Image (cartoon, rainbow over all chains, first blue to last red; front, side):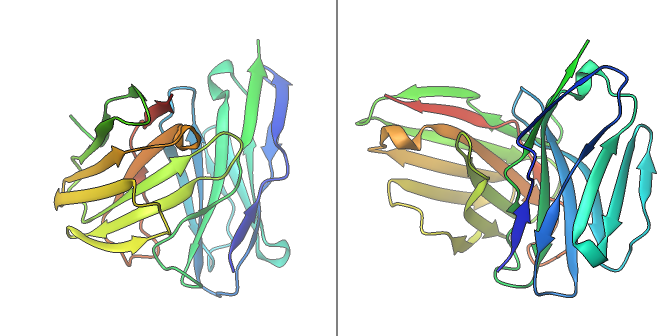
Length: 116
Length: 115
């Protein structure tokens, strides 16, 4: 069975602080893909990044960075110098061929609030 | 219009009403999905369509009836709903169904309230 755990339900930080959102996953597959989505108050899930299981290089995109650690089955997301506009619910998701190949398994999400 | 659009954005209905949610994708994708997002729960996959054919139905009650007339449009017909069906219903699309690496792109959702 597949599972994604986002243990942090809610996080509050003050603007300009760095914040890391944790994601731990479980799958029996050796080939899988991991995703992060952002859901602002408007409701739309915005795609942020996709990472395959064979690529453990960390990625940086502007203020966003992702740390993929296969040894600990984690795919953590860091926002540097947070801004109020970063306030949203962030979801980590997993897709593999264990079980349904078509299904994205989502974590329960982390509500991030960035205070001015 | 670009991306994935959903109408209406908000819907309030009684338990005896019949309504439909509409999703349209302008990305040229071949697979479309319906998800349900309830408060404090992970997103739940409801239905999956590939090239207008339903390929997955995750034990969804029959009061939810999907329809995919073509690869760009997806509907969710609702009838005799229950208050616990109140949720955000999200539509998504992806280039292919079986592409493990394919990213799903989501619409803004329809916020449904059942009275």
